[in-house]
Length: 589
Image (cartoon, rainbow, N blue to C red; front, side, top):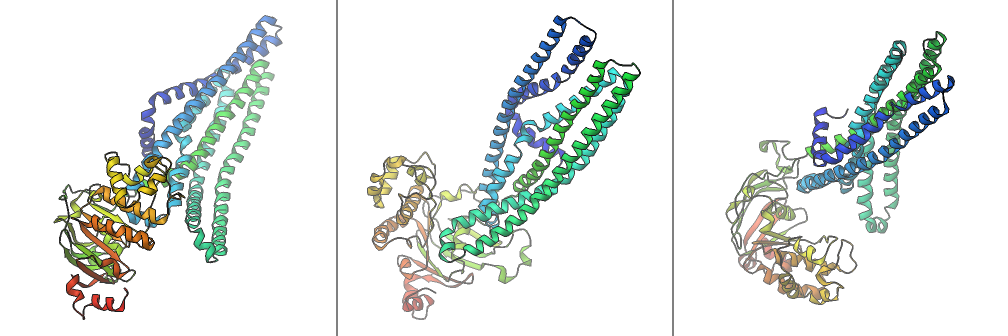
């Protein structure tokens, strides 16, 4: 059924154990309501036989009132079980969503490059939502209605062995057929959910690039792709629904057969004076009552088909493990950190798919990269687009692990530093700034409550952002967001600088961080950058030679290899150096 029984038991145990009390009351209300269904037919049989025999009106009224009382109690139990079931489902699925989001946040960047945000949203929300009934009622409904079927058959056997035998064979046949048919739908429903995730990923990706799509006339292409996905999605939905409809049609046919068997048995036994007319109705009622639990079991199995497909996809997501190793417990020193690359080789190929010796040179983004930057100095990193500059920065943050060589900060191999500790020592400012839908304070401190407001205000003052802060309606408590209209691109860039100031790392990397700033704001930030690099090691990824004027060392990359490395002043005074030639040309390549 799309997963081992052990996997399902483990999932239930993990997310239902914290809700033992609610699950207990859900079990009580659900099973009690099911059990009461066995009593009312007996009251109806008694009412009919008493009425046919000319019984007292008082007795008939008492039987009718008893029937009504049980019906009302059943409705109350149904309401209670619905309440407990929905509460259990929401609590369990929300806990699972939290675990999935945390798991995704801890996966390496290679995983996120291979999966669109829309696809992950569909797995975290859509697939988990499909599991809600599995958490709340699936097991109880199947067990409870199974017990109801058994209870009905026991009552039938007690009335007459022929009725019990005939309807027992019918129930076994019905359950056997449904059990075989329900397994057919797992594959189609899994395909449907996969295309659903693809659809949401496609929509999210292209809505985020709406300006470029409209400006370049690509609307027709996007609509054509969307149409193709929708056609595949519709075909997958029809196939999945057909398998479920097959279950429904089979159930209707089986119920008709069950009613015919009950009526035939009742007529036969009544003609032989073996039972009363009330018992004839009892047999028919119990045969009809068998339809309800069998139908419920069928519905639960149908829901489980979809849940099984979603469960497989959730399991698949949880089975992805970060390729980043975090077994070390080394501690980086305080203050400025030296940077050392020793024969580093790295390529954007699925790690673990091949041994190092099987790699070809062309597959490496960085090849045999070796250099040493002393603590407290600044490196100007220059190269063509695609030469490996940004890759080098990602490796220092351990967003990826290298395939060859070693990277050290402050003489410590970063592979031996806990992943959560490394970002506290390495800060980076890029061209793209992500603002979160929370307060200015949280955007600056990344939700660290230990950063004081005085430190924040001092940093904003140094960056010239105090006039902007004072203009906000609630100061540091003002809510920002990714599309906040109150923050310009330049101000967002300055907020990114403020984040690094507050973190106070030993190594600072600037990836053309002032490229989005107007000349006036850029001049304002130059002073702040000088202050930021004081007593720290810096790496400036340059697309313009002007940005490396403050660098002590220059490293020029080409196709992932070092073509020149040395002291900036020495290279500048050497007319044959690549750096001097680039300056003479007045641009980077």
